[in-house]
Length: 166
Image (tube, rainbow, N blue to C red; front, side):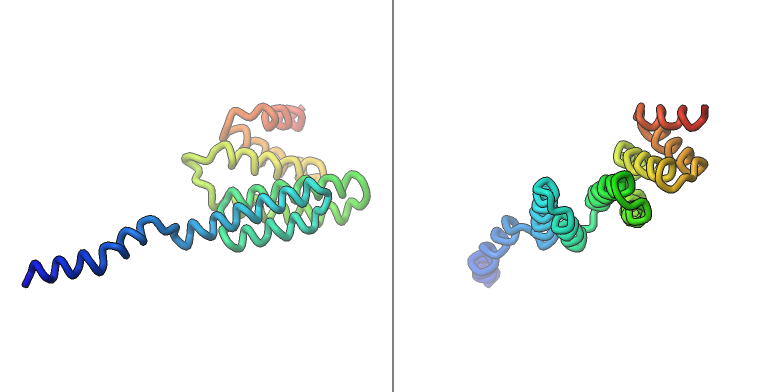
């Protein structure tokens, strides 16, 4: 009787067990879809369609809200906001930079401070740049640059910090 039960189990359930091990998890599928959307977003931006690219980034974050995606989106918004601030409309540029700030703070909250120091440093550096140039808050900029410099050996943050200190 035990043998028949074992044989029955092996014949009926073993293929399902094997199949389950080879099938990507729902999380993996979402990550893959988000990666594809992020790639499409980068391509759209490279092709000159910033709005379409940003839309793809938002969709990617909805599927897989990792700190790296928030950092990437924040970095893209930073670049866009900086360009708008310098080239055409300072107020609109500041609005975009505020959106970048939100994304960078989300990334900071989610990165692991014990192993993601380089990424954290990049986020803090970009925040320092915003506060130093667009938001005109040198004290806050200095705080962010110091965090960036303390987290990694990033010379850009150290240079920016020394410029503010002199």
